[in-house]
Amino acid sequence: MAAYELDRALETNPTSDGIKAEFIDMANIVRDYDREFANRQRLFGESKPNVWYLMFKGRLEEAKRTLDEEQAKNPEGQGLPETWALYFALKGDFHSAEAKIPEVLSRYPIKGPVYHHATYDIACVYALEGKADEAVKWLKETAATGFPCYPLFARDPFLNRIRQSAAFVDFMNESKVKWEVSRKEFGE
Image 1 (cartoon, helix red, strand yellow):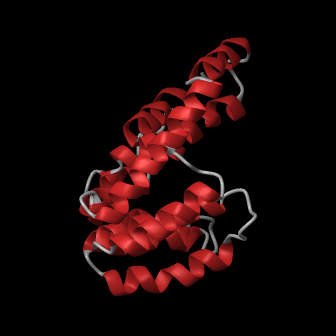
Image 2 (cartoon, helix red, strand yellow):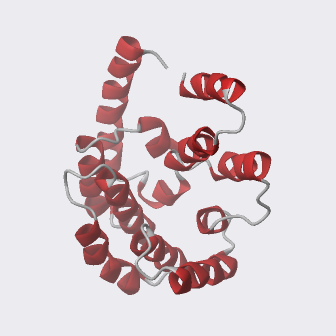
Image 3 (tube, rainbow, N blue to C red):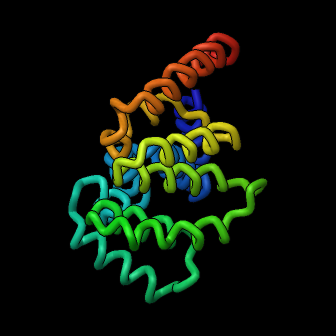
């Protein structure tokens, strides 16, 4: 539904950078980085993938260079602590990944509009580490504070390591029921 509305908006105003950015944001929120990068190329002519695309593709050395560049340009940039945390977790440096979590939480107030995205990143750090109970705790916080995205939870490869745990299976069963209720009430 949102994609349809964005297509219509872009047809109405094809020069709007704000509308174009929404295509990218929509793909980014659900971690569809192939679509996000394709939209960046199509709508803005960008040729260089972002750090998230690189991390999802396992191109960690390129991701680190990109993160270093972003850090140098804007040391207090939004999203850097959680991006570093995930980078470290993907590299297997779980001590450094977990050390970033307090910084992540300090940047996003609980009632803030993107807190739930930060908590999702924290859940992914713990999932990559194989800490299912801790990951599920943060997935529950993510869902409770505004991001109950069952389809993303079902396919995100960062959660693969905990998929067989009882805590994750229970969480997913509960999430699916809530998602089905919402789909029936609000549609796709």
